[in-house]
Image (tube, rainbow, N blue to C red):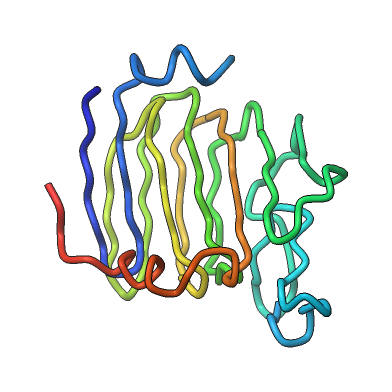
Amino acid sequence: MKLGVRSLKRCLWISISSEALCSTVGKPEETALQDKTGVVPVEAVEVLRSGRIVSPVPTLSTLSSRHAGWDGIAMESFNDVPACSVPEHEHPTHFLNLQRLGQVTFEWTTDGRTRRAKHGPGNLYILPAGTRDRLTRSGPTDQIVLVMAPQFLPERWTKQLTWPTLS
């Protein structure tokens, strides 16, 4: 399996060769939202934009874990996500986005740095809770997104998401 990793402060971009995926992948505010278990209720893929909770994906999901009853975790699959610009937003949850289809150019800005790269099937984007970013996607994609409440992972693991550059 070919694995490439690039880090940009609080944002990790991983590219896994598409051959490795073929067999496994088919075609708040915390304090205000915490329940009595201390876990932020997570029912859908959402971000904070201008103080409002919104979906970061401009299409409806084709598959969702909304009714699965998972505490602190949600997963959604999106097909035919169009080329678009996603304005600056904050991730209140850990955010993992697997690109399944589409060869597109992404331009993203986080921590004041703008990057541009061509991405295709197998790219995995991992952003820890609290990440602020914006992005532009040049063409259509299919993607699966998994979000997890900050309390879902031990703090010692999320601190590792700020690693120095890995190759």
